[in-house]
Length: 306
Image 1 (cartoon, helix red, strand yellow):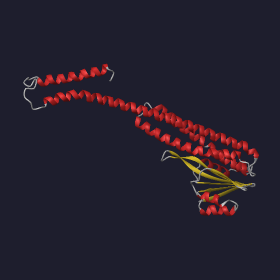
Image 2 (image 1 turned 90 degrees about the horizontal axis):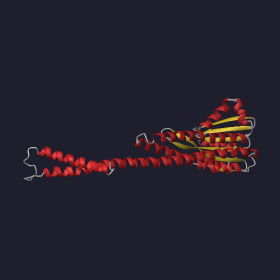
Image 3 (image 1 turned 60 degrees about the horizontal axis):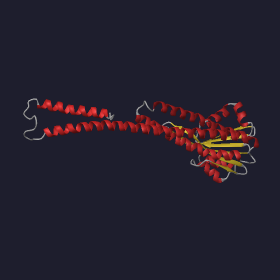
Image 4 (image 1 turned 45 degrees about the horizontal axis):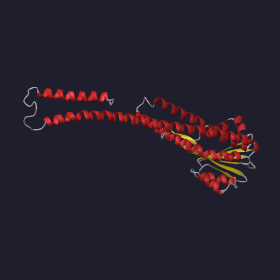
């Protein structure tokens, strides 16, 4: 869809958004030593995170979460990065905000361009990955805030709504957990990579990125445990409320049983029923039925069934 390029000194950053066949073929013409399989991977949007090493370049596939407002779900957005001597190529779908912000700053601000590209392709490569990893933390903080809100409303809000909110939050945490965990081994491998185009002094910086992804992984693991406990709590609460309703309905049914029996007997077409000729028979029978109901209620109350 769009191939843009920024050059400062000896470093060039090529940014390709939503690449089509022509974009990939043009990239292969500019850098003919890029393996055809890697070029094929650039056109696929379902590649798993990985690190491929070639004599002339590194090829990294990473996934980072983006928020889907309509589905209320974090989805994985793929970014492919090729880093060689004097250049960095990023290929993505244009929805990763930190990557867009970096590009806009480099494009519009000479100081930012010098800071990012003026220290070599290795530094540019590091800054891009670091910005993408760091952006995960604010997203997880927002998830933390949502979970705290659920903890505060779990006993006061409508149970059906709470169950729905917890289910959505749980689905989002599962998605985030899957996305983040897949990046850990790739970034660990990148930290330990001994490649001629990677400067040794960057090992500590990539180690810092790994520490950040560890932190994100620990946060999302904690969130998963908390949301699972909340789900168990709300299930217990819902079961308790259902049992309360069933108990009340059972009591009503049991009380109605003898009253229904008495009314059924007096509804028979029989002769010489008790109080059949008494002008106050209806009142007497009604009072008797009421007395039976009250007696049963008192009995249930005494047994702590009510």
